[in-house]
Amino acid sequence: MSETPSLEQLLKRDRVISLLGLALLCVLAWAYIASGAGMGMSARDMTTFSLFPHTEPQTEMAPDAMPGMSMPSTAPMDAMPMAATGWSVSTVLLVVAMWWVMMIAMMIPSAAPAVLLYARVYRHAAKQGQIEQKAAPTGPFVAGYLLVWLAFSVMAASLQRALVQAGLVSEMMMTSQSRWLSGGLLIVAGLYEISPLKGLCLDHCRSPIGFLTKNWRPGAAGAARLGVLHGAYCVGCCWALMALLFVGGVMNLLWIAMLAALALIEKVAPGGPWIGRGLGVALIVWGVVVVFV
Image (cartoon, rainbow, N blue to C red; front, side, top):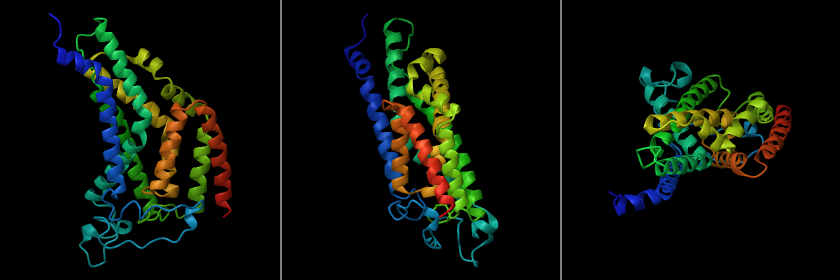
């Protein structure tokens, strides 16, 4: 008995459905970040452009800007400034969510080719009778991918807390306040851009067909596993670029957009690896200059 026309049409359109789903997820993530992600200020207010952000004057934080941060000294002990008492649980969750949604906004565009290719390969295998399930489980694939970035976001939030408590990152504007931190992060990111490990991870991201062929598993569990593995390579490719948000501002829309564009260019543009190496050299030079400004 043949499949119903509605199911046949759905299978033919799964690429469009997957693409629209990813686009919607990306748009919602960008909207959340632009609104301020619960930080007490809009991202527009935290967006500035400077080659040397650590030299810029810092804005004082309003008492109600974030829960558990920079409250007056008369506030209860669990709402005292984080430098003295640490972040509250609600603040930790808020910052982790901020980082995670920001990673979704930045990385979904560059992950889309792998997701769409996975759906295409799965559909081809189903037509060949190799798989009983007809619709590609792209949802579990994306979920596994984003789970890895959630783990990264937890680590990034923890690092942000430590840097703020050390006085190296502004509590309000979330930018570097130290030439040594700024210069060090730029130099480290530049060195990583030209490192063999970066090249290895980038090769996997630029050639997902080989990755899918080697690590293919059927079903939702197999899709989630593939998503986790692809996410791990993606984090390995981009973690140093993401760390540069501590230089220009974690919620600086200009920096977020530039870093997202760089990650996308490296992964999909012709000559992306060479562009990345050129970027690495520029970052090293920039970092050295920053140290002496």
